[in-house]
Each structure stands twice: as structure tokens, then as C-alpha cells.
Amino acid sequence: MTTFERDYKDAKEGNGVEVLKRRQAELKKLDKELRYCRNNFRAECIFQEIQKKKAEYRKIDELF
Image (cartoon, rainbow, N blue to C red):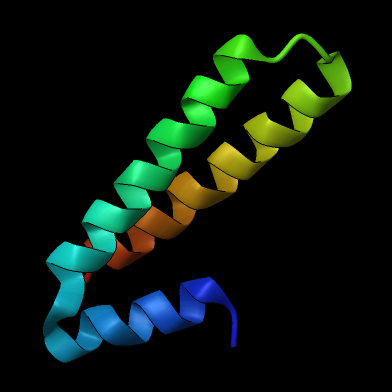
């Protein structure tokens, strides 16, 4: 089970606020890491991960 599947299940069970807060903190951490990254390849990887996490965040947020 992936983290998204686990978080989605938790959100359905009523722990949505905690899941969204944790996801938001992950996004902030990745965004900060992206700002200080000097390696272009690593920056592209972080950017793709941010896009993936934002899409997952929106799917979980749609439950409410």
C-alpha cells in the first residue's frame, strides 16, 4: 500500500485534517528543498515529485 492509498483511506475514515496537514508540510519541505537545490537534474526530480504530491493532495481534499 502506497502512502497515498494509506492517506486516502485515513481521510475517508475521518482523519482528513491530519492527513492534509501532514501532506502540506511535505509540500513545504519539498518546495524549500527545490529553492536551495543547485543540481538541475535533482531540481527536476523534486519538481516532478511536488507536482505528484499536489495532485494527490487535491484528490484527498476533494473528499471534503
